[in-house]
Length: 389
Image (cartoon, rainbow, N blue to C red; front, side):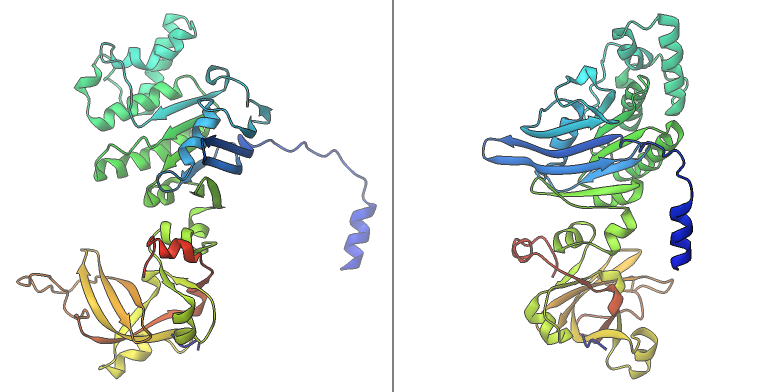
């Protein structure tokens, strides 16, 4: 790619000082939390603040420390170092039942011999809430998760998605200030998972309590969250709203884990961009035109773009989009995705390709706006093969 007013201050200081509102403590605070299992640091000096009423996701690969942090918040684990606070109250040494939180697990753990209504009301029974009141609250929780009329059924008479809703209602019926969700949608099929993502977010907005959601699914976190904390090797790498996280990753790990990202290592960046360093660019930010079609150049690749020439090495038709792998003349590969407009597809081909799309062997020029190239990278993560190219 070719890298183509003093008076106001005085007046303010002279104004009489009014009462200053006390800062509202975060719903959840992890302050320098470390949890070790032998030589493994499952959580390594984690500092995190989760706001009241927020849908907050802990995102990371397996073994990154996200579930350990959830268990520390719940009280199932105790930190070796650091403190856990709920709404400003230090609960580090408190057992789970003395914390105003509830947890929804991937394994719903419903009592098979109890009705749906009794499953939901069980926690209230343990707290010795009078029977008429607990049945009323259980029925309200059922209505919240859209399962009115299912109270007399047994769990084995429900679908997976319905059982997940019962588990959610059972957690909500106790009216916790913080609800912890440990990959609760992991056992659902794709369509049902997408439906439950929307419903979970709607329920969270209705009840207005803090949701802390653990997932390794990047799309799930981006879809549901107000903010996301990305974990790697027991540490928080970046905390940001979904759009900021995707568009402005702080390093190569975040760029590669949250979505797909192309990485240009220093040697290639020098040859392609004329600049030192490691750069990332998202596949959908790149546009291409056929070098054999000079008329297409101005329309697809602008004069302010960074560009690179190469050859299409692979094409994958994915329905809504087509994914290309472009072997650059500079010696690296780029993954490029382009939306498929409405046009004919070669229906008889073994690997169908929309008309007008690029074929394997096509000489192309790839271009992306300079503002869409992110600077930075961690070469040890790149060498581990986590990212593209």
